[in-house]
Image (tube, rainbow, N blue to C red):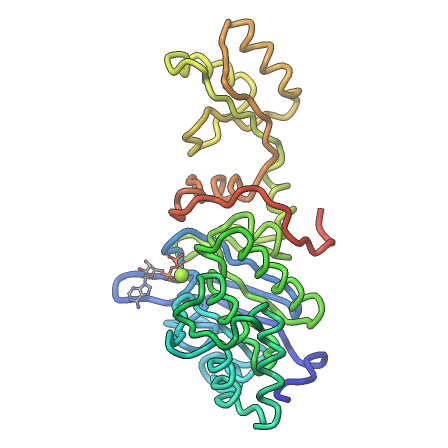
Length: 339
Ligand SMILES: Nc1ncnc2c1ncn2[C@@H]1O[C@H](COP(=O)(O)OP(=O)(O)OP(=O)(O)O)[C@@H](O)[C@H]1O
Ligand SMILES: [Mg+2]
């Protein structure tokens, strides 16, 4: 099997000063990255941030304008074939043929990847099983749901047992069940098989629950990096969010809240302040509002989220910037070593 022994191999991604220009636009603006073997790295950013452009460079599909990137120990510019032999990718623009079945796709990929003829059927069935497509294996892809297509994409990326996989927004547009099924599989690949995973996403929650480390990219630059817990710790204090019952009292509620902390920029649906050190909790805020005779429809304390990190670094909210609503709260698979 190709790359069967990944234990001795270099499964890292090391990027220095990577830049990509498109005419006058600098899509990726000098990024540095270091992803260790077996790590799940979440590359989080809004539409147009430069996520796909980065992935295309790391997968050798687009030459960098400057800077260097080594993937699995090989330079993406000078060792393209070696990089490609070590990696698998499920790109944002999936190229599936609607008239072929899931099994056809996998067999074809196994042939292209040089899997010996005698092993192709087993490998195909194994992967179909793994991504939960055994029952749909012999149906044409045109009848697949979005989630099924993304799972087939993932299976195709795994055919040659790559040590590193790149997933470009693997769950965008999927319902929460399909999203969680993919999360489970991705977490398993990293944990059990030691595969390094570089995953782009617009979903804060996806980065939060799945990634060991997160890099936040905005306008081609990495604006924050760390474990989700580290990033949230940087923000520190929780925030208080209030929704005035009467719209005409918005100003007065804002004033009262300002006594307790600094406004959280970008909060649109409610009034929010980040509590200052030394401020007690919600009770004080309730009392202060009560003293002024102000009524709120909703008042809550929120622990820092990755969105707060994004806000703090860019002055904008990632929710909404990405165009899609965050999924509802769920309990996805955790890797059991954070928080
Ligand atoms: N081939 C290209 N020619 C010109 N401009 C491009 C090209 N590819 C990307 N861009 C521009 O580069 C910037 C970064 O695009 P990129 O696709 O990397 O963003 P992204 O973070 O993947 O966004 P999304 O979440 O929408 O997929 C955008 O402004 C985009 O319009
Ligand atoms: Mg993209």
